[in-house]
Image 1 (cartoon, helix red, strand yellow):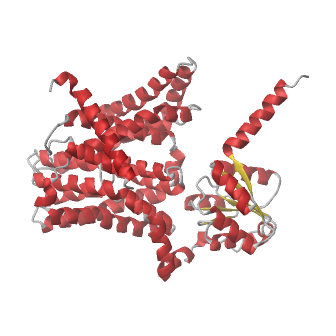
Image 2 (cartoon, rainbow, N blue to C red):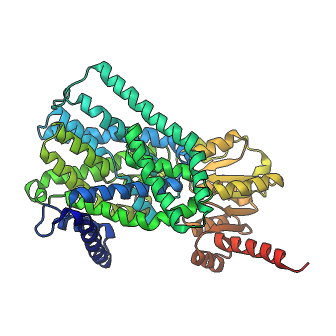
Image 3 (cartoon, helix red, strand yellow):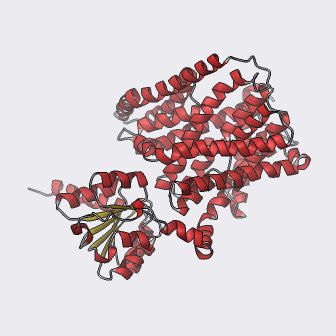
Length: 563
């Protein structure tokens, strides 16, 4: 194959076969990414027939990771990250430790050296951000509070892995590898320098980037050239990601993520996300194809029990650990199950880590094959675990008193303080959700001296509201206990302003059971859902696009009407 056309061959074979197998997978009710992974296996070096250039495929996949993380950053603000820090930081670190212990114990049972066991356990502990984002986007959960917890959790995991990749070479000799060792002072110096580099990059992006990049985007948008605008978005994502890796030692993915976060400050962030979407989707497919190319199917025949053990650690062990951790932070069962499903896979950092382990002679080659097998199987089955969340939660509530107790457990934030003023508990407004829309509604109610009680799933936000003297209760408003604590029986109006409100009908039914005369106002983004709610539940529904169009139309008519 001439080298000059290997790029074209790789893209053509990868995308073409992914299309065919992805289509077939969807037709037999499997996730499309299963087809993408199989496409990579077929054109990979371990199966007969055409073999694509694995090196080029890996680089194309890296571009896909950059663009995908950039797109997430465009929808994920610093405030979103800080809002989940109390669960994401300790949760991710403890989960990494638990998963590393499980994977390392498995390796020690196979008589691997301690260094190999450590690298192997770390490789199984970190989930793929790309796989998580695809799953959350397909389920419409990316902008939900639960989705933000999952994304924040993986951002912390990625930061931890950056430190591991930097510290592993100087520690290799101590752990039994071939690299030259380093004394304790050098290791601490390396750690300090790495932390300073990462901190410097984050500070630079938040202080300088938040001002510079939105300004650049505005200047390009003023040219009215669509191709220049698209080029600016893609160039920013890729160049910032590259610069972050070259200058600060931060991974491409994290660099692109922070680039998206600072671009979010621009009024053109939504347009930037839309313009880059086709490229993100195409290159994301190549990511899954490249994962399939790394997989050697022979490992399933040669080491079936070891592969099974690895998959169980990834899918079962990590998930249970994450679920217990989220529940320990007193979050709802649905949030715990969603985060568990999010972490039931491994991906890009795992490949980098085991590759480094093999190059440092810390890990046997079979370890890399086992990690790749675990990655392929866990990625392919990940959509299944997400689809089981709702039926599993329903079954647990029906058959487990413990699961029901989790929803009704004693929690100081799950009930209003006894000192709550009486005016909040009679003829008040119950406001479900305190996001961008909810805050504006609350401000209007405050300006008109109308009492209200906020029902919100973000624990930190409820704590903050209470500190400010606002009546707020924590929990999922689809649970009757939450609305009861908000004194829905005495309320005048129920406002559902949460952008990701689930079980809206159940909220309305509960409210009307406890208060038949209550009026209900709902925010919706879906026209069909809005029509059904208006017809079936007899509520007032505000559809974002509809209200915007009406407001613009009124303004246009006012301006165009003859004086």
